[in-house]
Image (cartoon, rainbow, N blue to C red; front, side, top):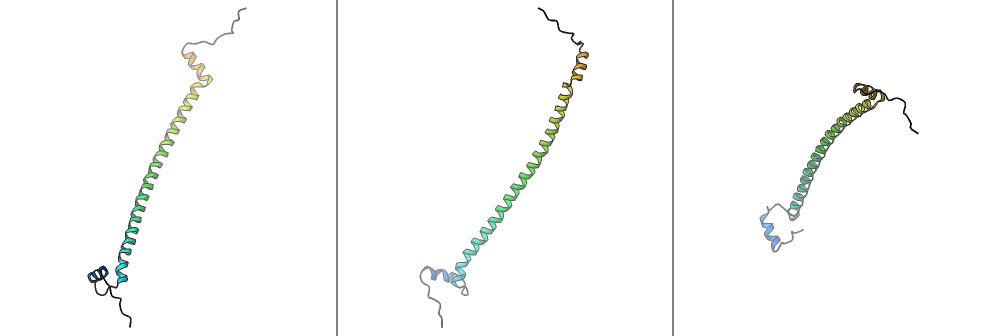
Amino acid sequence: MSRKPELRGRAARLARLLPGTASPGQAARTPFVLLVVLLLGGGLIGLLVLNSAVSEGSFKLADLQKDTKSLTDEQQALQRDIDAYSAPDALVRRARELGMVPGGDPAFLD
């Protein structure tokens, strides 16, 4: 004995556009479902973009770490060369090659 409520105004015009089997509850649910689908799709696309950015950053980080390691190795090799040239025996050898002689005892004047 329940009867459908009678629609008036704009609701009646919209109800005529919908198929006869659709109830007003289903018509109101369609925009909500569409909104949820759009939000989920947008979230998925945003997640993919974020994931791509993080992956790109990790590749850049790996390249920079590799560059840092090679530059550190080069710096250590150069420091070893400096230490080798600064050693006392190396200085004596190079001084003799240049024709230098060891100095004698210093003379003091009164």
